[in-house]
Structures are given as structure tokens and as C-alpha cells.
Figure (cartoon, rainbow, N blue to C red):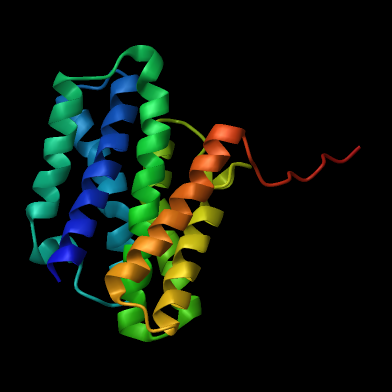
Amino acid sequence: MIALTLFDLLGVFVFAITGALAANRNDMDIFGHIVLAMFPAIGGGTLRDLILDAPVFWLAFPAYIWVAVLAAIIIYFFPPKIGRRMAWLEWGDAVGLALFCVMGTAKAYALTDSVTISVTMGVVTASFGGVIRDVICNEIPLIFQKEIYATAALLGGLVYCISIGLNAPNVVALTLGGICAFILRGCALHFGWSLPQRKPRQ
């Protein structure tokens, strides 16, 4: 249980960093940093819990909110250099995606015992908060672009479910799923991998 909570808190912190970095790139004030940090940090998990009709995770444990606030304050007072902000955002987002896709999948699997629903909720947990973050910053969300993003979350969720099906301990399944999601997303960032785009009509 402690390991799961630490996974969750780390995911919240990393995703909150990406929101704060986006606020920093758009020259927002400290309130803007905090608000924008909240969306990727708790947005996806909130939607997941509402869909699953489960208690919203941060209402029972407000420490999630304070972790997101701490991340926003750190970025506001100690921002990375201008040229590195996007790189920090992309790689931080990759870490957050890896953590959240498996945590979302694990929670949904415990409640539904359905691989399809669990993997779908893993993708929602990992991506929905980032969608809100990007929309507020007037940017096209990564999940709607050709970049490999949701696909990485999908892979992480599937690996988790397969590992659980093979009777792997939960922590091992979480770790394997998270690593696979991060590797795929990391390769997409490093090598420029992307999904094929539809050719425009002539």
C-alpha cells in the first residue's frame, strides 16, 4: 500500500511540474503556476474516479494537492533556462505518463477486473490532465497529434494487465508497465517516432 501511494505521489509531482513548466513558458504568475500544475496532476485521476463511480482520490488524501502546489512553487522560483523548458516539459511528461498509466490501470482493474476498461482508464488517467493543460495554453494536445503518446500509455496498461494475469506481484507489474510506457515514449521523443498521418485529400 505504501509503495502504491509513493507511485501515485511521484506521478502527481512530476505531472504538476509539467503544468508549472507550461505556465512558466507562458509567463503566468504564481497563481497561474499552481492552477496549471493542478490540471495534469489530478485532472486525469479525477475523471477516472468519476467514471468508475469511485471516491475521488485526492478528496480522501489532500496531500496530493500540496504536492502539486509544492511542484508549482519550485518551478516558479527556480525555473529552468528558457532553452530547456520544453525539453524538461516533454521528459517530465513522459515520466508522469508512465506512472499514471499504470496507476490508473491498476485502480480500474481492482474495481472492475476488466482488461479493456482498465487499460482505457489508464490512458484517461495519463492523458486527460495534459489535454486540459495544453488547451489552456492554446496548444494542440499531444494526444491529438501524430506523436506516440496515448499509444505509450496503452502499452503500459497492457503490460500491467498481462503481468497481473501471469501472477506477478502488483509492484512488479506496476514497474514493468511503467518502464515499457516510458521507453516507448522516450524513444518517440529521442528518435522522432510518430504514428502515420492521414494524407490530405488532393
